[in-house]
Length: 355
Image 1: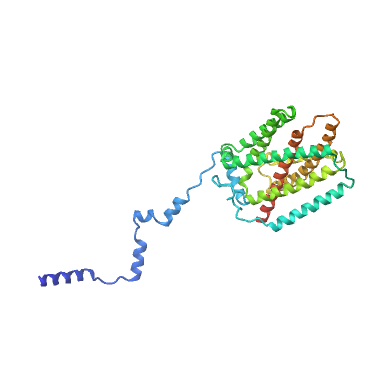
Image 2: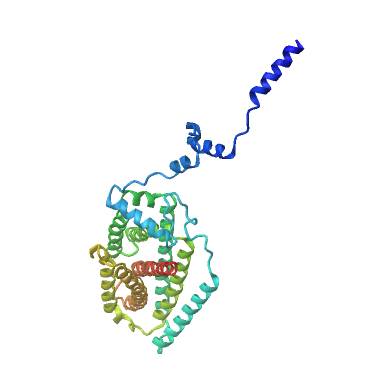
C-alpha cells in the first residue's frame, strides 16, 4: 500500500509540474482570450452603457423649448430638475454676500434720500385723513402681497406648478392672465366694502402668486436679493410720493404708459423675430426689457402713491367713495412687476459673470 501511495504521489507531481510560461505568452493569452458573458455583464463599459441611455428626440416644440430652458437655466443658477425641492437648486450652494447686500441697501437708502431732496424741495405735511387713507391702502397692499407669496409657495411646494408647466408651458401664463384681469375688473366694478369686492381682491392677489410660482425654480439667494431690493425701492419711492406736494407726480402717468408699451414690444420681440436673429440682439432686447422695467415700474409706484394721496383729498370732499382696497390693486401690480424686473437684472448679471 505504501508503494502504491508513493506511485500516485509521483504521478500527480509530474502532472502539475509543467514548464513556466513566459510573460509575453501571458500577455498574448490575456489579450486574445474572450471574456465570458458574465464578465461583459459586470464590466465598466457595460455599466456605462446602462447609465448613459441614448437621448431621445423631443416629441413637440414645447418639449424642445423646455429642454432649452433647462440647459440655459443650469448656467444661470436656476433649479430646473423636476423633483428638485425648494432651496436645493443650482446656485443654492452659493452663500449670500451680506457685505455686498449691505452696500446695495446703503446705496438705495442714499438714493432715496437724494431723490427726496432733489424732487421734494417743497414738501407738504400729511393731513390726518391723508395719513389714514395711505395707511389703509398700504395695509391692504401688504396683505395682498402676503397672499401672493403664500399662493406662489404653496403652488410650487405641492408640485402643481411643475405639473401644469409639464403639460403645457403656456397654461400657467394663460390661466393667471385671464384670472388676474377678471378679478381686477371685479375689484373695480364691485361696490366698496361688499363681500364680492374683498373676494375679487383676494382672488387677484392669488392669481399674481400663481404667476410668480415658477420663479421658485430659481436659486433662493437670488430671490432673496431681489425681494430685499424691491422692499427697499418700494419704501423709498413711496416715501417720496407721500411727502410730495399734492398732484406733483401725476403728470408722469402718460410717459410711464409709453414706456410700458416699449417694454411690451421688447418682451414680445423674441417671439416675432426670425430664428436667424443674432444672440447679441436678443441679449440687448432682454437687457432693455429688464433695466427698463426697473425704471418704469419704479415710476409706477411713485405715480400710484401720488394718486392715492390725490384720491384721499377727493374722498374727503365727497367727490368719490373711499376705497383703499381698489387703490392697493395698482400698487400690488407695480410691486410685483418691479420684483420680476429686478430679478431679471440679477440673472443677467450672473449670466454675464459666468460667461
